[in-house]
Image (cartoon, rainbow, N blue to C red; front, side, top):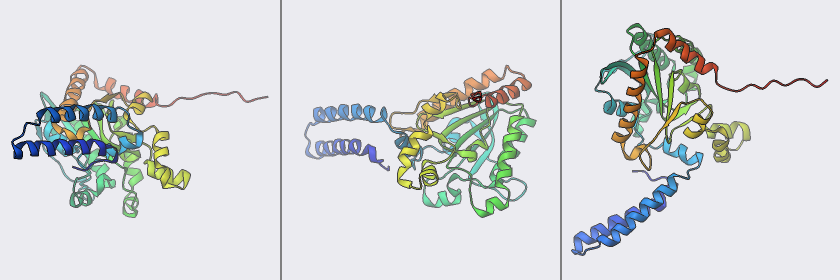
Length: 321
């Protein structure tokens, strides 16, 4: 598993533990006391490290190559899931996945970004950056869900919509804008979990939701810190400063009122324990589905509209005479 820069002191301790265990087995020597002491030291250090992360370090965890992805979590969370392909206009975009699923006693429509893990899959999934046909596929599934009164669950994990020439030629901006408009009028509840990286309109295109949750080490921003540093400061080395000022962490996003709550991750990040992460997400979704079952369709739609209208703060100033 890939070790992040700030995890190196921890990695050294765990390597030492593994070495002592090997020596204990090969040499038939009891080193249990020494191993136990180092394990306690490692656990204490791990808690210290992960309780004082910078926004840039949180971003590194959100982008971890072994972080749980949409399809992986779908397999752990849903009792049944059938993936549907294509936008009925151009082609199937593998960077967005989705289809009907079953969660306990609920039928839902699941939609999520899919980045991929190894190089081959990342290229196939376009690194989780959807083309217009990806958003049109998502809209097709949302309209189906609305027609059959199925709640919608979306997982966000994208650096942003694909900015390439071919995407612009096929109407990238229109596709995202149309999703925003149509999602505002859905009469079924929409529940979104930002599981990794939530980048700009590419994330918002499937996240106009009644409830928005942030995984503890997920991020959500209007632009990547690297992009912000390049545009505003003309210096990519200022990405750390940009990450801090953009307020991208889960705690910041909830504090700003954009997301509703932070979902805790296993110590060290979700990539260390996929099943525990899936259980946390499933519990939250089930609780919301039960609550929305009692609400009328128009109430659900109006609640979502009011939520987004309430974003931001305005200050009126009188002009000086």
